[in-house]
Amino acid sequence: MLPVSKTFLPLNTHGGSNKIPIIGFGTYTIYDRKNILDVLDVALGAGYRLIDTAAVYRNEEYIKEALAVLLPKYHLKREDLFITSKLAPRDYGDEKQVTAAVQSSLDNLGTNYLDLYLIHWPGASHIDAKSPENSKLRNLAWKALMKLHDNGKGPLKNIGVSNYTARHLKEMLADPFNIVPAVNQIEFHPYFQQSSEFHDICQKAQIVLQAYCSLGGFAGKRLLLNDKVIKRIAKKHSIYPAQVLLRWAIQRNYAIIPKSITPERIKINFDVDIELSKDDLNDINNIKHVEKFGWDPQFIA
Image 1 (tube, one colour):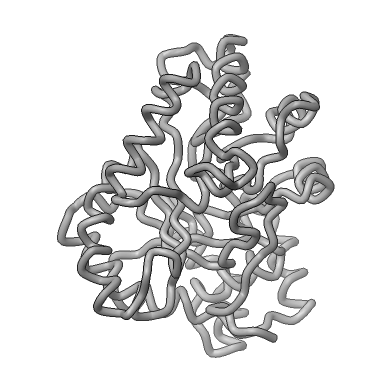
Image 2 (tube, rainbow, N blue to C red):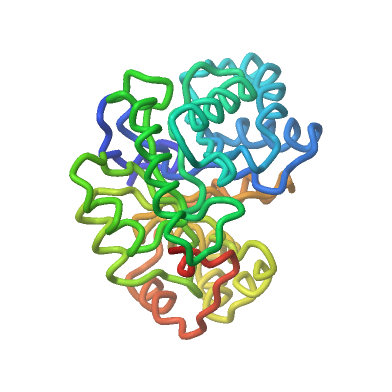
């Protein structure tokens, strides 16, 4: 078994990079310039090579400043990293609007390409959740991203989506002129395991699933880490509950992007080479409690 640091998932790419690190570093809610520098220093030192951000995180420029210092420190080049950003819901629309938003992220991050760029949410800003205008705007945005992808020859080496449900994916895949998204980044953890229909669609289309809220996230973080099943399995393997949760997601064939601002936890979250047994996996899969910690895209038309 390869260590996590050397493990990748293949992408259904049309040119460009054809694999994604199975573990990356999430930067959601890390807004402060010094915090970004500090956490990325620890993360790169620990071995993380995927950095996940988004226009709405308001930290792309801080990441650029941090990487200017840290890449030389760790003898790394831009091409050693896999950088993901996301199109903000306020920027869904025609090609001109989307292109301007992409260029803004490229400039903010100080790079001429992104390894992965996602539509952040199936709904557009200032549009009623039930309005069919959401479908129109996200589809317009996808067409624009396809042009910027340009079979891997453009500035977006891979394009994908985030928070798309089975229904949103079916709509997208029904258009024969759409390329299939490389990645769908979604909430996934033992309390919210997504539907079998959702997993079937993604598996058949070879869409990589990347989990957020793996440790609970938002208001639910301590709930998951204190779950009696998770704690029992952690004790059995002499590891932390966070490592159980992250390893479970990996063994469910998900990529993961854990986030922390605590140096020790950043390192612990990357150390997930322990193999969970079939019984461990079944016990976690069969946890009965259901709770979603993030916003629910199910209501977006």
